[in-house]
Structure formats: C-alpha cells, structure tokens
Length: 264
Image (cartoon, rainbow, N blue to C red; front, side, top):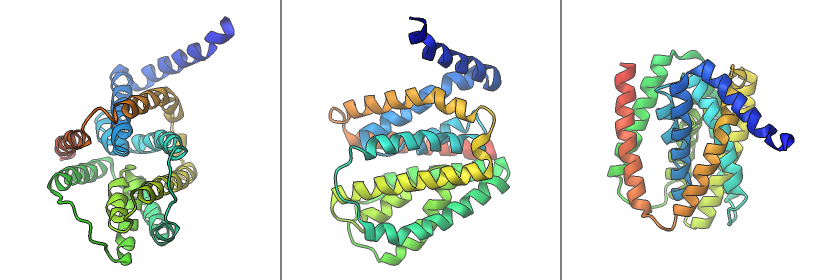
C-alpha cells in the first residue's frame, strides 16, 4: 500500500516545491491554462501552444515558458502521431526542413539575446495578428509555388524557437501544397515531431532546458495536458469545430492585445 502511494507523494512534493518557488497563483493558473490548451488541441488538432504560451507569459518569463511548452508539446505530438493515419509527403518535408532549421537557430539566438519586454511585444503582435488574420481569412485552395517553403520555413522555425507557435505558418503552407487531408495531417505531425526533437537539443545545448524548476514544472503539468487531450478527443465529435476556432481566435486577439499593452 505504501509503495502504491509513493508516486502520489512524490507528485505532492513536486507541487510543494514549485509552490514555494513560483507562487500559488502560477501553480493554480498554469495547470488550468495547459489543460484548456490541450482540450483545444484534442478537438481541432492544433492550438495548444499558441493558446498556452500567451496565457502563461502573464505569470512566467518567456525564456521559461518556451521550453516548458516544448516539453508538453512533445508528449502531445507523440501521443497523436502514433494514432495518425496517412503517409507524410516526404518531398514537402525535404523542401521545407532546411529553412525550418535555419529559422530555429535564428529564433534561439533572439530568445537568448532579446530583452523580456521585446519578446513579450513580439509575441503579443504575432498572437494578435494570428487571431485577426484567422478570423478574416477566406478559404483558398489555389496551389502555391514551392519557393514559398523558404519564407514559411524560416518564419515558422523562428516562431517555433521563440514561442513554440510556428504551427499556423506550417499549416498555411502545407494546406496550399498538399491536397490530400490524410497526407496533410501526417506531414504536419511528422514535421512537428522533428522540430520538437531538434528544439530539445538546441535548448539543452543553450542551457534553457536546465533552468531551475523547469523539468519539475513539466512533470507537474503533464497529467493536466494528458487529461485535456483526453477530454478534447471525447468532445471532438460533439461540438462544432468552427465555433471552437472562432472562440480561440477571439481569445488570441484579446490576449495578444493584453501582452502588447503589458510590454508597452
């Protein structure tokens, strides 16, 4: 009986340590934000980090938030990728990956060098723009030129390294290059998994992964991410994806504006 309770006791000890280090408001708000983000991810297939990161940035430094959400995203990418059907488009992956790698390196340099205020301002502007453009976007299916892989890869890699929010950029590019929905989803899942592995290496080498309490925070939040993913998958067929996305886009606009105001 005592051995069965050991994981629970260890988890409570982690919570107590983080409570002392980060404060009660972070330890209460962060699990709710993470769970909410992964409910969205489970329902629509993306949106966890671009929802989580701006919310967590109100309580934690961005240099802490970015590697933290990266670790949680790796869990989600593996969980979803193992159940994903369809063959990834290797040609598109080979085309965009070199530019994604370049963007990841540039983004990591900016994450280390830029002051916190500039990082918050850039994140707020990006999130605000993502929300507004998503609400205003018309559905377009015309195939774009392969050369768009260069700006899409560099920009997506930079925002992936800075905030873990490069997903919308990859989605726009692949949706205009890959017609088959199964191939599109499989290609996105594989790209996100590759980027996650590369980011772990980059953050480990740079030292960002070894910040005090970061790994403990990831352990604390992982069950909330898993529960959110479970709930989102269950709600997937019962709720309108369009209404969910509309709510997410409005949340991005409000949150982006709040971050800009805070940085300003």
